[in-house]
Image (cartoon, rainbow, N blue to C red; front, side, top):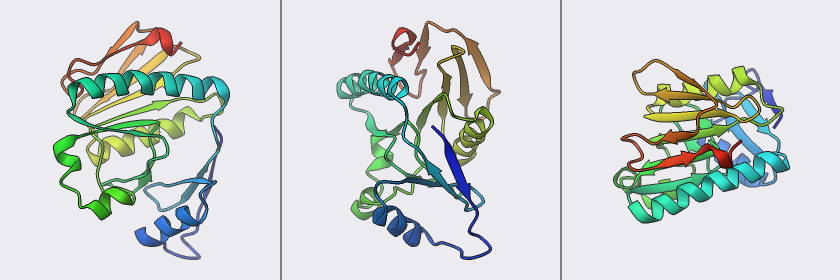
Length: 191
């Protein structure tokens, strides 16, 4: 997925409501905002990445329906992160009690909440440094566990709150640890 960054800061400073309205007025364009307030225009994924995304999401949906501890979100969900950016992870999970602390209006718009877990699956056209910067934004906002999966190199970066980055080469299974109790992702569906 190719991303284009537009710096509008010298022209206008967009409020959260204005950003939300801009996204609603342009539903065919996936927009994010980084920490500097720059707009990021995201292109759609290709077939292989889209297929892997849905397969991974299916595993999470099945697990979440059984455990009933939280809410899952797809890549179309934009979160207003604590660090100040507006981001859409490929997959996100929020503990149920935290989700229900938001008002119905907050849950309807771009939720002002940092997910407990995020997953980013690299597309062939993604820039590793840009996606790593996005992962750092998640962690700076309070994400407890994050996975950055590079399908082509079979490499996974595991981000944990307050811990050193862990890099795994060709893992067979990823564990949700204590953040996603009992969840394991068999990487055969990813590779």
